[in-house]
Length: 83
Image (spheres, helix red, strand yellow):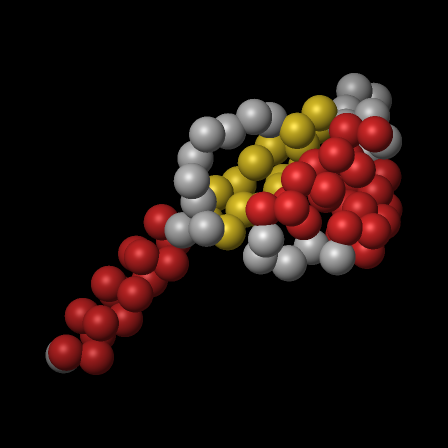
């Protein structure tokens, strides 16, 4: 029973540390998103640092993608394609 409680609490904490940021580009496809995502991840060597995240977002913007702005202080951010 205690293990189940710890699992639920840990799950809630972990879920609270993630934040999905929508990324879009008019007329784009999901395949194009995957391609530019791969290139930007490689070029920015995306890690946990603020600098890497900023480089990744700058790469997306340089390729014509719109990255939603967020003030959320999430520890881990994910980027989701939105058509």
